[in-house]
Structures are given as structure tokens and as C-alpha cells.
Length: 265
Ligand code: SIN
View 1 (cartoon, rainbow, N blue to C red):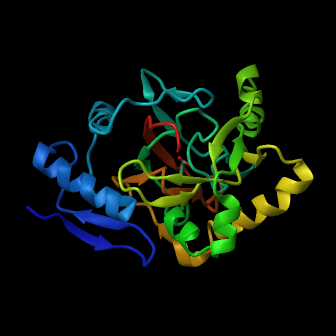
View 2 (cartoon, rainbow, N blue to C red):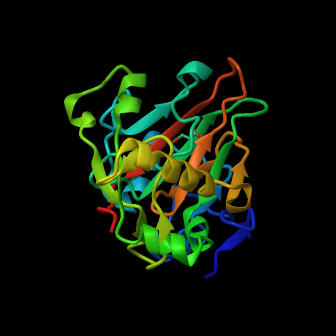
View 3 (cartoon, rainbow, N blue to C red):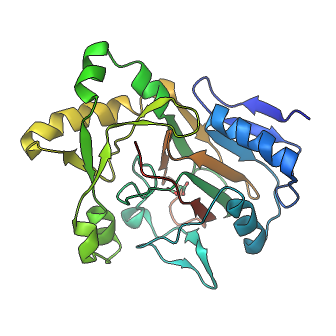
């Protein structure tokens, strides 16, 4: 069987048609897995999932992550309820890959739309393979072997939960190799990367600023306009995302399930 996929931009993303995520058998799962590795972001429209069914589909990809800082949906520890807390507290309105301050950051996130604004509240995605591949040979050589420091301190402060462990930085390679496809990807982000190993802040900041800008130029992005019942999943090993807060006080509720990944190499 071949999956009905419609590409969503030149850089990444595909809408998968005709699939009910509550009833995915093994051959279909393998097709979805292949499409996930090819397109990095998959959109499934018109889903009707209970929290149990979303968790069950998430568990097909691996062990689920319990977020160390952001509270979960009551009764469902693996589900983060993303709700409108106002623009000032919109912690996801910044380019990031999920939880990169962890030793083993998530490999995938699956976000399901419960309630969405009439207009706005889109999510942007950026392809980090494309961002890396177009760097010059000189810049690639400079980044080869370089490690960056990632910290959850900003998120901890924003959510009032700055535990001591979050203050220690986690080191990850600036360029990671995707464990399933072998492709290289840029792996720094504005939300959690704070500098480079063995460099001062003054030395780190211009390079970090340059890479974070390169990582999200419009030609490596796609934009998803949510409808109720959408489930969008993305590969945190090759994608960054950004939740646009342009919907004032309107309700926007999404449930996120996150799958644990391996240590970036
Ligand atoms: C997230 O960063 O996981 C949430 C994205 C969104 O709310 O669109």
C-alpha cells in the first residue's frame, strides 16, 4: 500500500490523507514512519482521538516523555496541555526544538488540536538538514566537532520552576547526525542554546546569532494553519518550530505527546 501524501512546502512537511490514527496496523505504521523520515513534519486532518488513543499512537514511536517543567493534563502524565495563557506567557513563541536541554531530547512530538482560534495561532516549522546543507565548506569545518551548551533555565524562570538541575548546561553537538537517515542537521536553537563549549559568552554570541538566523530563513520553513482535529507530528532531530501568538484571548488548546529520543551524536 502506498500512503496518500501531499507536500506542504518546498522545504518540508506533508499532509497524509485517508488515515485514522486510532486504527493503524503495522504495515500502515511502517508507511507513516517512512513518510515521517522523508518529510519531517506530517499533518493528519480530521482525527477523533481520545487522550488514551493519542498516547497509544505516540507509544508506537517509543517511550513517552514526561515534561520536567511544564505541567501535564490531569490524569494523563504523558500529555502536555498547551493552552492560551496570554502572549506574555507564550513560552513556545520562539524558535526551538523540544527539550534540547535534556541529555536525550525528544525524537518526535505529536500535537493534537482540541480547540483552535478562528484565525491565527499557526505553527511554523524549519528544516534543519536544509539549514545545515547550504552552509559553506568553511563554516561546516568550523562547526565540525563543536559542542553547544543547552539550558532550561529560561523556561524554568518563565514557568516559575527553576530547579537546580536546569542550571547545569547540557552539551550537544552543533551538527547532529540523524540516527535513522544518517543526514546531518544543525542543532542549535534560540530558546535553549546559550553558548559553545570552551568559548566565552562574547565569542559565542555572534556565531550563535548567525546560526539561529540561518536555521529559520523562510526558504527552509513551512507554516501550519490549525483546524480542530488536526494531529501534526514532527521530528525534533531535524526540525525546529515556532508557535505564533497572534490570537489575543481566543481559546487555543492542543495536546502534546512527546517521544523520548537518543543522545544527539
Ligand atoms: C510546542 O512548542 O510544542 C507547541 C507548538 C504550538 O503550540 O503550536
